[in-house]
Length: 295
Image (cartoon, rainbow, N blue to C red; front, top):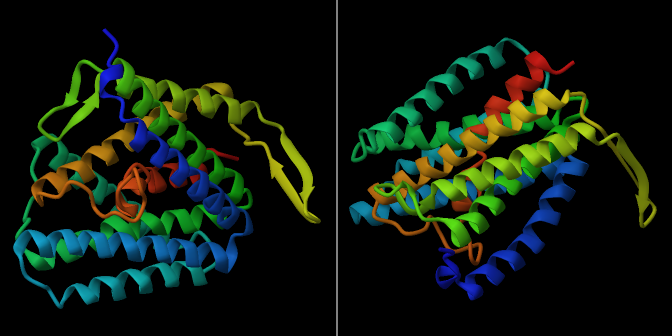
């Protein structure tokens, strides 16, 4: 039986209108790169941190002044990586190990269905810096690659396809709950729809040979990706899995902090953190795939 009765038309159009504004702005920042892109990343991370700390303060009903160090550390980390202009140096090996450790820790929390050390303000601050700053470092590094715009466009396209198909298929066909204790509305049917959408877009990118045109006198050159179809299938599926895990990890945090949404900046979606949770784990994973496997 189809679940059309659960379809919220007003919220759907809110989501659509938000995407119509949000997606082109992201693509433009990605295309021009450099300082414009860095500022866009910095603003997104700053708002995400604001939402993370606001949820925590509301949960404990008190204000933590030391959270300002979280903003400072995150900005310094992103700035240091931006100034090195994407060169792959020994520091990136540290980022690789740290990212693997952070992802492993977050996945452990997900499987245990528990946020560890939740009431420890210092640990929460450290968690926020690693969850945002360290993960977003890899987006800056990815954009700095020779085909950085194409790689970023691919990643965003695959995750957007995953999120949109998971949402629509889940609304219409969702019957079996994926993680009822963490996110009651997510279903296995929606998860499968997201996986199929991600793989399809990934394969389409692998077939894409490139465009060369101009918009208002601005030259636009987009090259194809040098990955095989089988790589595209594997990569699309892996990105979908980690994107959905990232979504559940943020849902677990919100549930622990008794928050419905991280914020209200994006109508129909919630906060910036709600919109970007699918990307957090995939930034480092896709970046290191590009560095080590794409030639």
